[in-house]
Length: 274
Ligand SMILES: Cc1cc2nc3c(=O)[nH]c(=O)nc-3n(C[C@H](O)[C@H](O)[C@H](O)COP(=O)(O)OP(=O)(O)OC[C@H]3O[C@@H](n4cnc5c(N)ncnc54)[C@H](O)[C@@H]3O)c2cc1C
Image (cartoon, rainbow, N blue to C red; front, top):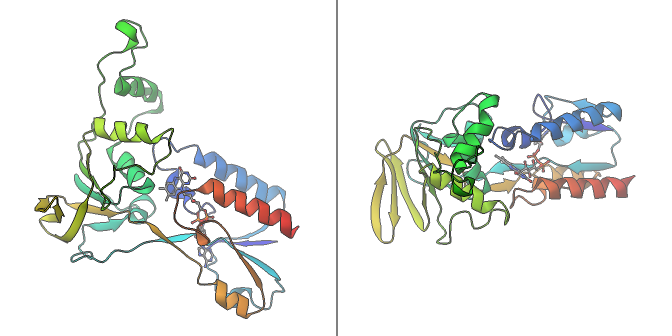
């Protein structure tokens, strides 16, 4: 069994997700899979971007295409401005955002990027006191109901989280945790705007129209989080070479942030192929 990976390590989007404050435990999932690959004797080929010819003549009958997604590019005047980046540039390629940032797209990744950019780095031992302070929890029971005035973290960044839809930003987040993400960002002073029409980007910032009024958001960085497209152009050439191709995960359906679905699909397929 061979597993090919273009990158120098396994993990795909998890390598970005684990950088989001609160999602650090994704590292453990990766540790688990690295160990399983070892235990099961899977031949792992890192730094190997596959093309159809890479697999040709190797006797493979079944190919599982788990190539994931590519971030959706948007068309907008000024989209090539040096202050514009995708979430991949920020979370994977180490590009730095400035102090005034607009995020285009308030889906799961947009919210994660807002969390990442407003989070103040602190030593691990300060994390619990900082959490209690941010949410106004009085662990010493000095205040009535153990609730003290919250002291929100301030990152020093001015941040706009924008969406085209007129619905409430973050309406599609998880039912049990969505309200927490919205409340945390609101406490940190993030401006969440819905019903935004994007007009263009230039040296003065991001030009938008909202409720019929043109507005300039004076930002130095625009992070595009405008969805993802399935990456599956290898499917047709592999089939043409006579291999049976199975699409799973983001390569099959890029719409949601859903690693559980990807892993479930992979496990069921593996059981069928066994
Ligand atoms: C910031 C962020 C936060 C997220 N948070 C969550 C969350 O909280 N919960 C959740 O369920 N999901 C979350 N996700 C989504 C989750 O990470 C994805 O659903 C999951 O990683 C999809 O797995 P996949 O295997 O389909 O694709 P990917 O993780 O995209 O992996 C695809 C892999 O294929 C490799 N590849 C592509 N083309 C080739 C090629 N030609 N040859 C060789 N290798 C190739 C890529 O290098 C990559 O490693 C998050 C994603 C991001 C970006």
